[in-house]
Length: 569
Image (cartoon, rainbow, N blue to C red; front, side, top):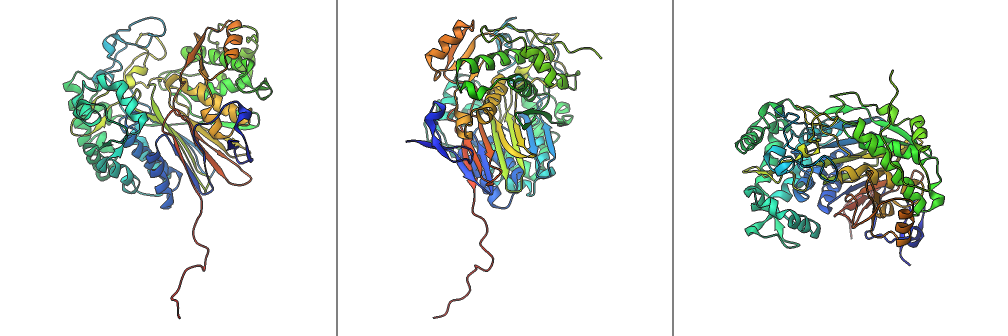
């Protein structure tokens, strides 16, 4: 019998949830680090073992990930940081990218006016190359978080990343496959191809990738701080390269970039409090909206993966996506009706529209008057009660595919997250944040940490995170089971189910009017932590869809008086 842990409540047969997990969880009492690469997790665990807190470990991990998970994250990117401090204070840093000041609503020519090509631009100008580059927020936010709530200095937390970049790291199968899928685009940019396509070839699994230019840039950041990439020498080098090659990013764009401190979006679900990120990300709002809609049904009694449970999830998703398209955007550019969208009363209105027998066609609600789809995610917790859940990206795999020569820095392509059609909430405008679905989420119970969860995956993110929360709370899954469980997704067209769902479920849902589609995977490598409040044990899990690795810390200092003195005889 194969068994797995169930969030600190004992061991049980995995067949009780209808699928087997691919990976094993980790457990700890003094700390837990879960990232989408073993070397990223190792960096965070190393810093925590040195006495650092969860914030120190998170920043060490994300710098290390910028080296060894280069397709997903880097300092020239964007994201959200969700922190629950031991004091009970919640902090959200919105470090999402902004459009350059020279951006205009007609910057791109759309390919189509309907899905699936709606967000695409002619000649791929919004997702490949220099015109796709937005003003980044990652580096500024990483240093801001460290200086605000960390206990160690920048040099200390960056040492693991610098070592990995200088000495190299072995490629995983996941990274090799990612390079292979993007090789043709990467070959168009010499500085990118030189590192990731040695001698023009896709590396083999285990081959060492060395990033010495990037190591030198990291050393420059240690010496001069985050501002070196916003107002200093790195900023000028990057802008010169962008503008030589047809991009519009300027030194003023970098110099004027500011992170935003946002108020966490709060909701409740079956006695738990949801602490989620607000707009500019739509993710947190729609997670709470969906949970509000689903709360009226006993999903646990329906059973995980049942046709009824999947149907309800799909209907809640269709409603959320209709509202997302209509109402969500940059809160600095217009008012977003978050309070209304996450209200229980609005959920009741939308719930009444759901027919258990038929798939619905939903329009956006109307409040009464008076994204790359490739990111990384990490969850870190310490023994003091600090919890960090952060999702960070350079958007698509390897971002714009541009590496600035001499720096080793990959540039984002976050401009592809804007609607290329003028006149919409999420259309291009100067110095505007595009809409995101990132959803680094913390769940508490009785005021104490219960769960930290998040995933890569663009518009697939918030539906996937919502399903993981339901998996744990309604279906009693361990975190390892919750992040690996088969997933569903729709934004109003086809209903996608991962291939491991039984054929009978596909057939049942098709009979209700769903247009069914089988998918090899939905969203990316989700990872999370659950907390057993009675024992103090943390369980960390990362799923099979990426290189996710959990490292738990136990042990502790020696008992007082146990030191050795000199021995006689």
